[in-house]
Image 1 (tube, rainbow, N blue to C red):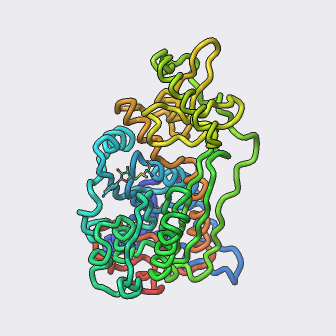
Image 2: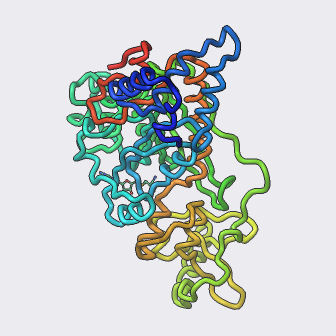
Length: 415
Ligand SMILES: C[S@@+](CC[C@H](N)C(=O)[O-])C[C@H]1O[C@@H](n2cnc3c(N)ncnc32)[C@H](O)[C@@H]1O
């Protein structure tokens, strides 16, 4: 990204001083300010203008994407972060309480995430454009409590929903009003607790006045693994209106990735199953087969895809076993697990057990990237076509009542 001083070089001194003053006042970078200015100056009814091409050029600087900011909650090892950064996102805040995940996150992103999200005041979280969270799934017990009533309460949901992590998120959303939310969860979120969990999540976000899109996506088109996760994307109706043109991505064209592509040429023999464990797994599978329950372990087809890597893979590795000629099958090595999830070759700084756990809990960054690219198209539409103003918010701490650039530029003022 071009530095601020480069952006305003070559303009008259008084213009430069005005830009600096406005940036200070609105607490935005010069790049963000200029993008907003350009957008408001463009007049589509008069055909393409100089400003249109400037906006396009500005958008193409850096990663070739619009710059936007995001926060990474229930961050794990940053699967959402990697996907969002790949399309131009800038992370302003992260929260993850597990010390092993924090160690990986520090090694990969250079920062230790903040700890327990339930102990963080929403007002201490910087303003951001996209709230990203892979929140743990918990049952809800809100019998007899209307969500609308809950929303109307000054302090959000905490009194009705003791400790429920989704409501921690909802409270942050209510207070910070991020223009976009990106949530990720296990596939069975929709069927969890007889569908009640999903009903509460959807209605809560809708009552917060977000237009919600959701889809279960299988990562198998991006990595050689069957891995279904639900993505929930929300757009603030006050910013984008009722019909933001969002669509989930299509699967990438071309041949599907094959499991053999993620394998190391020579895995350490310690990953080969002992005779004892291999016999146990076969006996267990036999018993279940007799009861009509199917197989208990998964021997991978090297030219196909694997089953889903789970957080319990460290226990026996039974869901993904790699056949070996003349030997017992073996487990994935941690580096192979990392590649099976499509994470870049960043160092593994925790034990094997923790590494399997972390990858088994994570989201596939390439799927996030594909979804985030579609989100960016909506930001782009809003910025360059909708002409309601730039939605990037000032990256300062605040109570969510601060002006957005849109508000500053005369658009809808949000509270
Ligand atoms: C499903 S995982 C998210 C994985 C992440 N999307 C990734 O790609 O690595 C949920 C994470 O939430 C974390 N977590 C649970 N409760 C938390 C809390 N109260 N505060 C912060 N993190 C929490 C867990 O430690 C876990 O790593």
